[in-house]
Image (cartoon, rainbow, N blue to C red; front, side):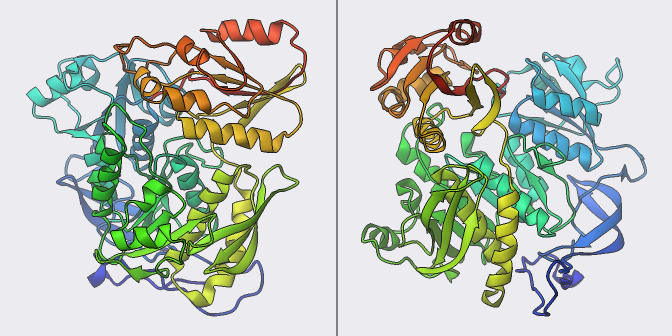
Length: 554
């Protein structure tokens, strides 16, 4: 099935993909074609010559202004050099890897080596431990400097590399500005929300790619099914991005589709309360392009609060929401999803399957459409998959193709194996199944423990939890204390401080003494946990969940 190309004269327009109605035999659907191209583009004010091969994807032909690969700078024949400060974090490491894939020269610095930096080094990046002005000098005399510097939100403005670069006139960009610039000529699909961003964005990117869409994607976690680890570097019009609200990073974007998985107060060091968080998301929704689409979890109270008063009242009355693809007053369509049947799209009859994941019936406007089967367990992953389905259907935007699209979606959703550090089994010892999860918010902790109990209804469930930042622990102490109710034994460790100083005079021991329900204890270090739990014979240990923050760069 070949897709029509975008006329050059309309390369600035955001067009919904046009899909052929021609029938095909099973397993013989052709989604993409390839054509040679050569064009000149302007990248941050520098003319560049781009040559290569491009694919006509589900979303149309790559326009001339797209800059997928930067091979040479005109006249100078030198690569565009970008230096990333804080390159070890999940956010900046993905941007750095994408820059490498697009042919740029990349260097970067951080104070601690992370697993993300291993892949960057193998891909050709120059990496430095510690911050120094020598890191941004290709030659010892400083005769060659980066074309641009990109800075993580975690880096303070008084960083020596930032100050030196500014003194020499080298452009310094925060992550939000850089993201806005590299995505501005795409159909940007921004996956946002307090929880579930990484899994939803990864699942969406995997499914679109598997369906033949030559996408670009950036995710803030390692995805085993991505060849690039946490990125996909393609040449199509669609760009899937995990859009983070931290430090207002997503406010620099201009998305075509926005997914909101849920909204809660989480980043207490940035937002003073939940209302401040909701206001940031409201500002983000104003960035949706005219003719775009908002896809929102109607089950989330915080997400529902983003809608206008009329729709809030509709949700509270449990009546059917405005039909899919109806334009809002801001010029974009709105679709909702969830478990509740008042959503446009909802899941019913959720149950465990033989793969250890979840099966459910997909319904649209109350009508059953298909059986969906996931390898991933947990109701939260059912919600994540619904977000993916609605997004793909919004891209297809043709009701006559619903059955065909859903059938392909079902296949690829079932093949998705998940994201690293999201309820991942890492081994067995002493008959214990050991899982690792990134959960660091009370809602996430509760969800992953529920998932473990769902997967293992019989047997003791032990949880080892390392609180993430003092500010978050202080703000959510009562919520954390109540989040472990489905566990049989809880161990709390020292706090992972990240960039914080403990001005709250709080510790993991305070949480250990506050846990409601199961027996809990405080063991500060990983070594102590290993010795106390695994070296000593503890009877009845059946399932073990770790939320340890070793090698968890920010």
